Image 1: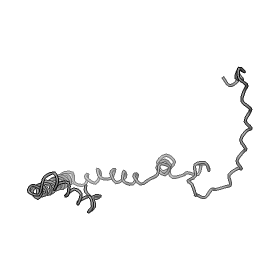
Image 2: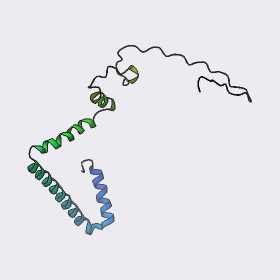
Image 3: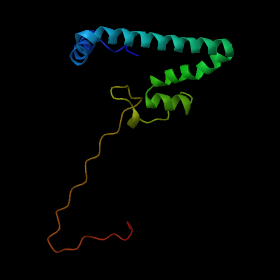
Image 4: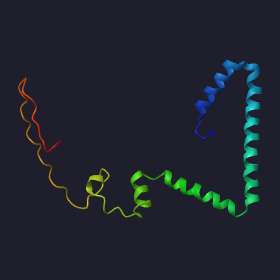
Length: 134
């Protein structure tokens, strides 16, 4: 729960607590917070062990989907899709979807030049109409 809190953050919390609570009440507040956290941790570990005892081997069946979810958290979207939808075969994905810096199976065609831009229409001229496009 507090794995990401470093010493700098702890010092900042103590200074803020010292300013807000004062030097008389700060030690009591620290004791109360630590005992409450310890008690909550004991309750949670007791509930886990009770579930493990009550469910027996079925408890591991409940944990398996959680471990699968942990594996999925580290996957990229492309890896997840190819694993679950394509059974890991991503050979049909073209060069356009290759990761930057990845080797390409064959060379890409040279880029086509952009079509020439036409001059803007003079004011008052109606825009061209293409019946096939509408």
